[in-house]
Length: 119
Image (cartoon, rainbow, N blue to C red; front, side):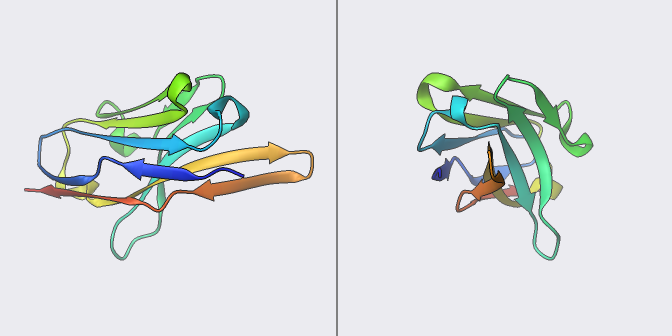
């Protein structure tokens, strides 16, 4: 199991930047992949960015060139740096951890942090 605690959300103006943090309760070397998802009001949760244990990253097309996912293994923390924010980036952002074991895989979620971008 792993507990995930997000921080860094809040209100920001369009064009601004914000960094989200996700602290894991275990070494992220033991987690197969971590990522950020978001859910806007009335919409389904969508993938924003992921990073594997090997450091391979990927981002959704809607945030490419603006958002960057990274990790600090010493702090067991994953970050989402968000630049040039747009009002459509407004959502609750959730941290995710995927752990695979001999019996299968399981997703773990943080409690979410609200990001609001004003126009």
